[in-house]
Length: 354
Ligand SMILES: Cc1ncc(COP(=O)(O)O)c(C=O)c1O
Image (tube, rainbow, N blue to C red; front, top):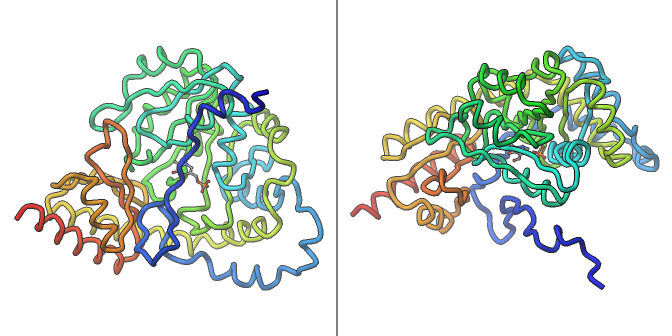
């Protein structure tokens, strides 16, 4: 008897960015934050009594939802917490997309969405971005996704880093019949965001990650904001205790130290500007980025550069998509890390040209 569902047997599964243990690398491949999280968190951990671990956590991370509601001007009932924002995306597909149904997203965008559709036994309708990585015309999106219950829109987009025009996103929210899920994992690094759309449109849910701007990829935490009815349905789908007790305390402390997060974000944005300019001076084409990474087209073959950088102890990422085949994605690290990247990239590029 074949016990595994066909859709699972036939899928490859999500490929996470590499977390190597063989040697120490300058790790610019998974968009982690190079700076430590809020120092308040050290105290939170120190004060966390072992006794607390005996008990199950508060099932909905209520204290964090209350804090986030206060910070962003929502009610706690408009908010659901996840074990990372990936957990929220999983819940979204389970809640809104039928087996045999479909979800929509752009390509290139976050490669997890099609994997979640496969797990659900659903299809993904991928709408190619324009050649300059902007959104295609609204009519194209609506025509091709008319059967989709959910459209995942990543803003700023990953792996390209650009922010789609806010008015165009609003138009999509207005006309799309299903849920528009705005994945704002990188929004703290951007000039603007769409969180208010989760209030203004009844079909919009916005998610945030604590892995990037809050430097908390390791403890897994994310938030989603939307109408109470949608949040209520997702609450039925989530694992009973999906956010562990320590993570709840840490996420709360992180939210309460906005100053620390914003200071780190400002440093990363300043480094991002400087590195983009220096890469361009070395002959790269660099896309305008509003995230904590840069998508850059080197003057030599992208995969060759990636390989050579790896030999020099630097990890960056490559995405096998027709629109990004000539690019590498570089996470913005510390100034020191980026200086090393710039020096090695220049050396490799000059060596290839000679
Ligand atoms: C667009 C996008 N959404 C969501 C995530 C997942 O974030 P988390 O670590 O909160 O699960 C990522 C991670 O890289 C991402 O790039």
